[in-house]
Image (cartoon, rainbow, N blue to C red; front, side, top):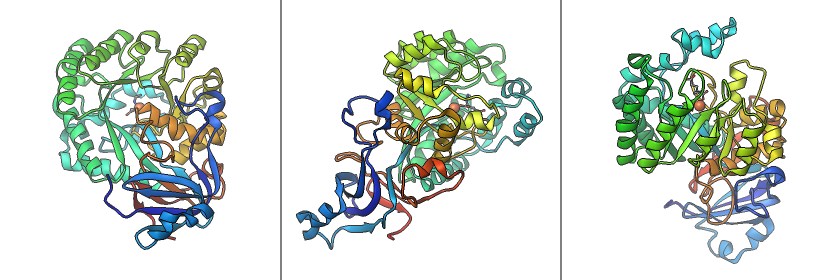
Length: 427
Ligand code: NIG
Ligand code: FE
């Protein structure tokens, strides 16, 4: 709860509220385009929450606002665009160094899988994390979170997954927690100990999974260090059977699940879906039967086109087919040193539109309200509606389509997180 003064944003050119006619579930099909735009809008926030939304002329005539003018911080948005803070529902910020050798090898023609088999890939980020003190890790995470905030992201899911030992996975989760305490937005921590089999367990994935399931998951749950458990279920990572063991353990320890699936090859989804994962992410190699299973479920399919772009794949997840079949789709950066080193949700929206043929409106909905659903935060995040957390971005744009249109520029001028103006100034 914020202790700051109430905040009135007015003269908003386009206020994208994300309010929709139904609003009971994640957005599917046509509903994904409903942005609830108010022209010449205003938003009143108090106690860290949205109090009301409407037209500027009505807000300025409001009795309460008139009586409390001295107490309210007024932000004249001068015709700019206001969006709900982006919800980046898939990131891996707990690492130390970029993977520049992998980058060059891929440019020279090696694939992501080949690089991993040859000793690069996820495992090559492990030593840095194991050697790092918690303070350095925290500093790295916090600076990534700050970069995200500067581009309009106010809620972030942050995974561990480069420690791959009890000590270093818990150290990563601790660093995420302490970085989160210093950051004005909201962070959700996920234990991704089942990201890769570490070198010392080479050829013995089930022994590593004993450690993951009998020690790491129970400890993360008991110490409330993670809100989710994730697993990388794909060729070269963990099999379906191994991943189900991870899900079982998460369930026994009271933690909800999510997974990386079908990024490199097709992952069978049926049994994973029986655990009701909040989200299944990547979904590049899904077939028609997977798509209809996803459409009938409440699981969000989180697309991370930054990874396809950075790996130079030329091929992207079938966003159009997923959306048109009724799958609830979200967008996230997948910020990580191996496949998607970007903190920018606007860049991801741009890729979603140009490469996956999502409309700009669909991309905004996928990056706000549906990604809030993917984190089980749909009641507090992802839209600008009374009672929700006051998380908004103010952009130097007249039209919401500009967010995906301008490539690689940051038009975010100010950010309100949990009711506080945390970036930018009154203008
Ligand atoms: O989401 N696919 C697995 N995990 C990450 C990549 C991690 C890495 O290469 O460091 C992803 O793409
Ligand atoms: Fe990922």
